[in-house]
Amino acid sequence: MKSVQIILVALLNLTFMSTLIAQNKNFHSFSAKTIDGSILDFSTLKGKKVLVVNTASKCGFTPQYKDLEELYKQYGGDKFTIIGFPANNFLSQEPGTDNEIKQFCEVNYGVTFQMMSKISVKGDDIHPVYKWLTSKTENGVMDSKVSWNFQKYMIDENGNLVDFVEPKKSPASEKIINWLTQ
Image (cartoon, rainbow, N blue to C red; front, side, top):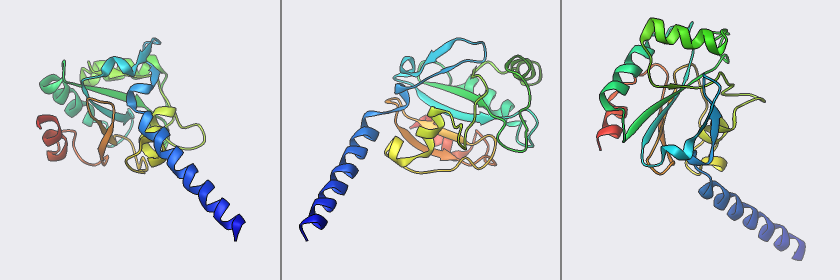
């Protein structure tokens, strides 16, 4: 009986510590390499809402780059930004190098929002930012699964995960616009 109590106390302590760790880690705790090769420290985004999107150049949803750019032009600035993370996790729909991806985005969609170096958004080699975005034990809010290219994660001004929007939904969806304008 005593050993069962010890195990229960240990489990409760572990759960409590995991919650504390998740509460102390937020989006601003991370950094990542930009598509140009420099490091972006996400703590520099404090005070801004951030839309994080995994992107791909050869996907049926690729035209969302246009909608993302329009959203950025309309709302971007001191209070909001977009960060695109190219990823090749779904049917090899982002096979290009960082330079090829950058050129594709600029030439075809006039992308001016921040694009990052290509990463993995799932699996054993998942980037730490996406591990945080998709794991409740990391973000303290919810578990999610990146289901395809152009899944959109909403981060508040304090670096906390708010919610996400499925890939098939437009960046100009009511959910995103309401979040931006509240």
